[in-house]
Image (cartoon, rainbow, N blue to C red; front, side, top):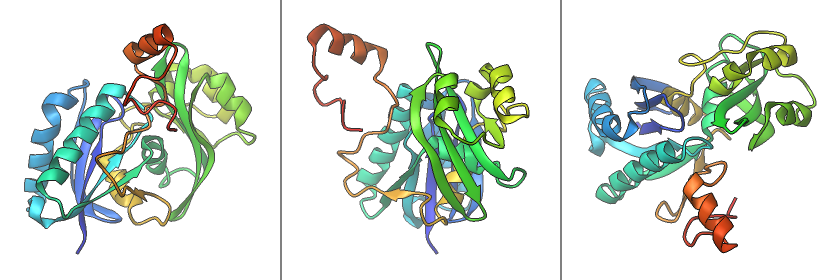
Length: 242
């Protein structure tokens, strides 16, 4: 039995889950951007509800963005801390946008656009075609305006999910032909990460967790100001890596 802990902190709605690839045994969801205070207690309670502890786990799967800079940092720092204490565990990742799109497969057929509100008139977005137990990426995760996303996607998706879709509901509905699904139903879930572990291309292994950085989508505001003032990438920031 291969048990995984899943961590999803890319948006204001965070969650953790425990289970075997394909099926979550327990899950806890927390909101209001309380990731720093809620994540570790939620992990402990999720393990308790599943009658497990860290020694029962084979690995950790973490949503690697794009999304909230602070949320992603908290999620990965927590995962790395657990890996240091339990060095036999493996680490896998999946795009948070894919986790949001995956959850629609039970009631929607066709491509799904996942959009998170990135502020400044932009969204973090991607488009996936979820068919049975497989997934195909139609538009890779990016940070752009809703109109730019529509231009990049040659075929209108069947539905759009996420707080970014809800923030531009009229434009999105003209694009897809139906109202978008916002949080909580349209938010990514850690249980989706557990399910994606059973999909061949659903998650990716991370060979060196200590050197890995999430896909933030764009630099944090403080980093962007520093790089503009100095005309170069902030050292050790991972700028330009993806």
